[in-house]
Length: 334
Image (tube, rainbow, N blue to C red):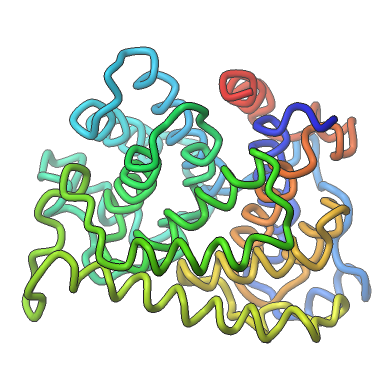
């Protein structure tokens, strides 16, 4: 019986992030030159340092824990908590891991007190929208509307593009479905069905007037673009998997992961190539020419949600940065 799925997922996110951190801005030639043909396989350092991906996932997760202990769980409750968590992170001396420009620009607006719908970067669908959403997928007991709305809201605080919202929701659901025991072989069809069923669903209670911008007539028109772009990248994933070369750069098939939908698809490709080998899944994400830390961290979140904490090398749990916070978060959701 698989146990510790939430812990396995949140630690897996951090492990993938740490493994991909040294390769994030390297092409495959330089990765092979530095690490050999097998790429990085071991965590570096004591502790093994993570990036802003894990730091912001912890902010989302710890904000969720606080919100859920002060019910009811509503956007009016959790949005100010996440605002404060994000601003605290941006001002922290630990925020020295090449944070994304979109996140920093949007959080600067939040820090100045602007409404988040004004502070967000409307045209951005960078992977910062979904690199941090894993905790939303780990929370038990949420309704579908709450999980979808929360996943999109945490993205929307910084990334206002509809594809960033849709990809974040899909990422959260992959984590949730795997945590609940869905077979990896069922993910692709479940993702497509979710895209189709949600195509015109705009979560106004969570997103407010975010949809209002020039050239957009209705909330449904706004959000449909995000779901359509996610379906397009799922087409690429479907085409890549049957012929996937486990020794090839996954970014060649599904994109470099710098944008939200590609981060989801390429992380899924890494996980689905190695569904029973979590270390191989994050290695494949780290040994890639794209946004290696974000791809590997999502692949690790998926693998850990499916296989549980015991699937990871036991010694890594004491070597990873923020081990105490990761432990508390995993236990809260387990």
